[in-house]
Image (cartoon, rainbow over the protein chains, first blue to last red):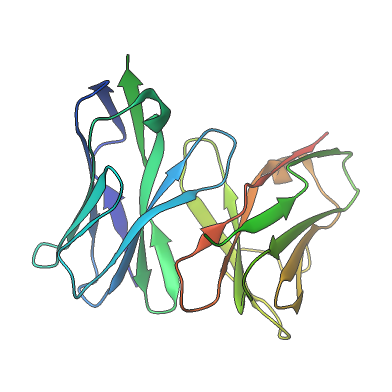
Length: 110
Length: 114
């Protein structure tokens, strides 16, 4: 199986600063990872993914870093904006099933 | 990107009635669809996995006779909450995958049973 944990349940950042959200997983055989953003009352929205053959992947204002040695995953959001306020959680593919972290609630202070 | 449509977005029903929630993949064929339940400030709890044309696989503790899942085509899965009770009130979310792409989620259905 797999267990997934997020390091901080809440995170507050100033608008314009960078945000870093972390996730830890337990199964070293897990090979596919996804970050989702969930706004209140909505379903999760895909942000970025990464496979285990990569350490880093960049999107628009977002970067995902994967450290397989310590089984750690992070999401970096550059120049955080008020519209980035949401709950972020990672999903880890273990076997045929995705396992989800409990989420970090990001609040952007204007 | 891939779009998953879930309907209705919210529903209020009386105790004892049944409610059907639809999940459609709009621009891809979903070989597998997943149904989740989410409580406030908690993560997604997988209820069942459905594959097109076969019976759904339910997670431990989920009553298959209460939460009926039908995956009749590669673009549609339905979840029917039968004989709903107030404790069934929750946020239900579906997701879909074609095995070559990440999971894409519907926008969820807020079910309130009075």
